[in-house]
Image (cartoon, rainbow, N blue to C red):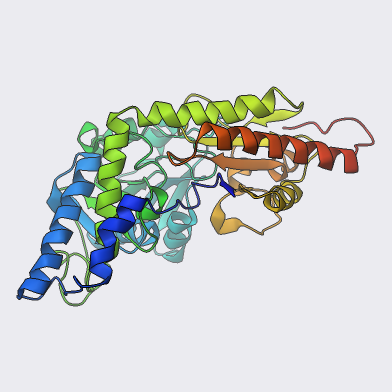
Length: 388
């Protein structure tokens, strides 16, 4: 099997599993207890908190462990609205994850939502952001890197614009953390969401960065864990996994990890585009994750392509993992102004540090052969379909 769907989830790194294993066996103590078994767990959680903080250059006390990126996103929105009853307006974008869009919509009609459009490259216009922020804007929430296209927004500048207008700023950085360098000291970011399974930690653990001094209200109420910010006994083994994965990611980034991912991604794209006609890369080629390629294939249904590639042992995606199986055009592609044909023919390819050049070349051959087969079975009657 060749796995190129790393924006959906990643394989747990062997070193992460090794670090977790003792806390699934003998080191099973509750970190809130006072005896040595519990203290061991507490110390390990503290170490993991430091490791996550170092990955984004924050303070350890600014990190709250959560169950996933969705919980982190929901908690940030909840906190911003809970702490200011006079501000009932949120600014976001048309290409956010459903964890942002649907949670915000669930609070309507008590709040108003402004969705910023994106251009054909998948980028917002910063002047649109300036114009959208009002006196009653509680929060601006903008995804750092889109999970489908990999397009990255200018988060540091967006945060500065937001703070200049006295609003709070949150970024869903779930698909950015661990893949690109992030430094929360470079911009006034109040909240930042993290999910471990996107960078080789297990599923079921995430984190929320909350800037010191930012208003915060617990989303979970109970026993007062996480310094009173998130109740519930910590999932110690998963937290250890997240911390270890964060340290590994930091070390990769310091040793040229972004460039290494981009080399694999570009090799994959070049192999495909140079071998078959009618392939287009979607979104800004410069402002995107180094691991993500989003391609459209003329006269191809992405669902059919996924069936064939799966039969040949290749795992890729036609969009967000959360929307797999749906037969309507991607809302991300629609927001970028592309027509249904281009949207329905688009495929996401996402590599990780655990892929290699041999896999990339073999995956390219599989995709090329499957596209050629589908085109031979379904020749167009009136010439090539025009993308828009």
